[in-house]
Length: 147
Image (tube, rainbow, N blue to C red; front, side, top):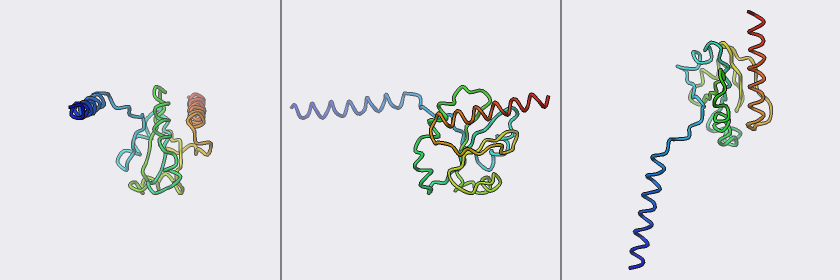
């Protein structure tokens, strides 16, 4: 009897846990997957800085990043006029060729459709965030000087 009751409780716990997980909203990073159909239009968006990661699934350095880019996307939520993107160069070879990507992972800032800066610093959230915020500030100052 105790064994049957324990099995019942175990199954009930699994079902309850599954229902709770399904009902919770997904914690989705603010990383936008860019493709051949979307890349050009997105990086040309007016007054928007795009920080894009270019990777391929087979690259060990890309794999070693783990969830860094997704975590970075979450850390950047709420930053106006900065978008975080990602391109799979295994699928989007033409995009990566046009963006002048020759190694993986590559991190580039785009503004007004042009690649304006390439990131070569430490691969942690604070360093990435500091870099893209500095680049966005430079671009804003340059835009104000032109007006």
